[in-house]
Image (cartoon, rainbow, N blue to C red; front, side, top):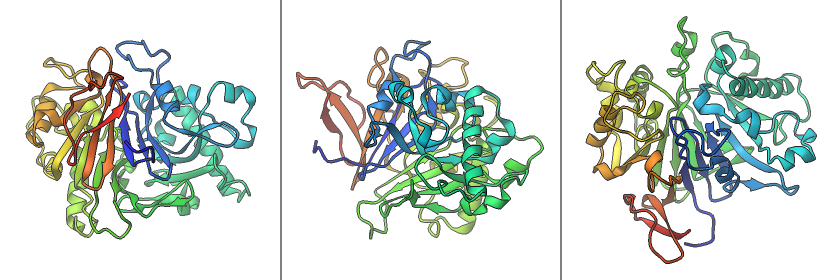
Length: 388
């Protein structure tokens, strides 16, 4: 492979949890959720995802590791575990020598859902909320440091309590396209925001999963292209009620008008491949709108289950019958990838796709003898062999 940085997506093996990293060719790194445990050996997690993450991001001129953007889809523990311990919170100018020695990661720009403010229930979610409030207060006060790296923030969706109405200029809503990340415009990458919807945030029976941030990441080979070379769906723990709204609203306003906002080459199975994407319980029929969402798969598309090993038992998540439903909608069972068993169950490693002009291509590491360490499925373009 060329040493030049490529657009890529990396899905970390974090058992029943989510952690994905989008890397752009200009060096921008966007992390979606985190599930960093106290020990790499805890339960069945055999990959040290914290070390892996540190090796995948940049450091600034002072040697501080940082992310351009952190998107927390919702505040469940398995989507923000380790945030308090591994990420820096507080004024960026107060980042200390001890913080650097502990490799605390600075987040230049946060994406924040008001749902977190109303239902936080664990220490990591609370830490994320408090850091968001610190940054929002800078913007409320017109502080001169509000737009510096480490203070930037974007509000995603509405808030039932309306406590952020005065910060509407920081808000992005469903149906909007975002192409500016960490104060830098992108002309070949953008995000189409699908959810959360106001109906879920205003409901008296608010549910974190149904109010997850859902978005489509879109890549172009050239800025002037009218077609996307890759479209990847991220949806946290969104359930069938959310997807019913997404399908109906997007089709109502025209998927073509929305720049093919439902199409996908890569689809992260919501809620760790649980049945809730298809219906409420395993005894119910599959919801039609959920199946319709999967019909937007492009040729050669992959489904990624970020979960423990999917086996034929009563677990949910992951749920074996859900896996079968996904496989029906893609070219072959080899296009269904489970983070817990790639490239092998005894030594899981991040699943990596390089984004090429022909679509996502699975990156397969090989050892120094030249033999591939994984024989996973090939992408729409090809399988790329890299030196491990």
